[in-house]
Amino acid sequence: MFYGKFMRAISLISGGIDSPVSSYLMLRRGVELAYLHFHSFPLVSRSSVYKTIQLVRILSRYGPSCILYLAPLAEIQSYLRARIDPRYLVILYRRFMLRIAERIARWERAVFLVTGESLGQVSSQTLQNLRAIDAAVKMPILRPLIGLDKEEIVALAKEIGTYEVSIKPQEDCCTLFVPRRQATAAKLEEVEDIEKALPAEELVAEALKKVERIEVSQTSI
Image 1 (cartoon, helix red, strand yellow):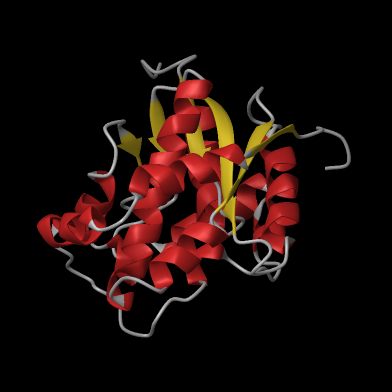
Image 2 (cartoon, one colour; image 1 turned 180 degrees about the vertical axis):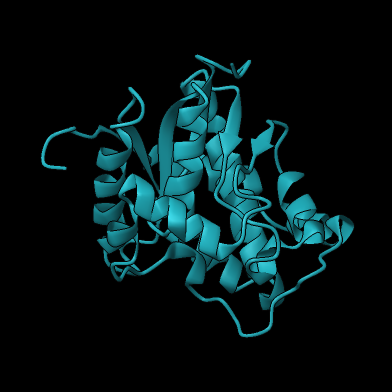
């Protein structure tokens, strides 16, 4: 039996294929989850929000919690876009997301964070970049999919019933303002130097004021 049984975590869920699968794997080990979805409304539509609600309904088959937090990222993204080297945008996005997630984890008395990242699947998920991203927070971050390839993840998504929802079109917050060229081996020192000129705490505090907490109904799955 997993030693984390009845432990609580915040699972970052995007509406894509990977994060619902990572959430399922933690639920299967007895971890109680509250979910956190980042959106970029009103810069994009709320399509990812509606998808995520559907996914949380499906995941409620495997665990007791249906709490979903909806966190706005648009203002942070717009602020960063105008001020930093675009190659570092995704890394900075994710560092801010983790900061917000860590604060919400404290509200929920959660002890770690869960993400759906798989090593090397996209440019931001290299070992160097993951190190630079993780350093933004002190809370442990678990990545259940870290060693799986896309085919394995898709097979699990189909098995648990999330795949058909995940592949529906959406406007993802992490693809907003993303340049063609991105840093793939970011040095932590460089990222921290960039952030020294940013009002990080103020940006996080403003986002937290606008976070929504909803309880997703288990009906109409």
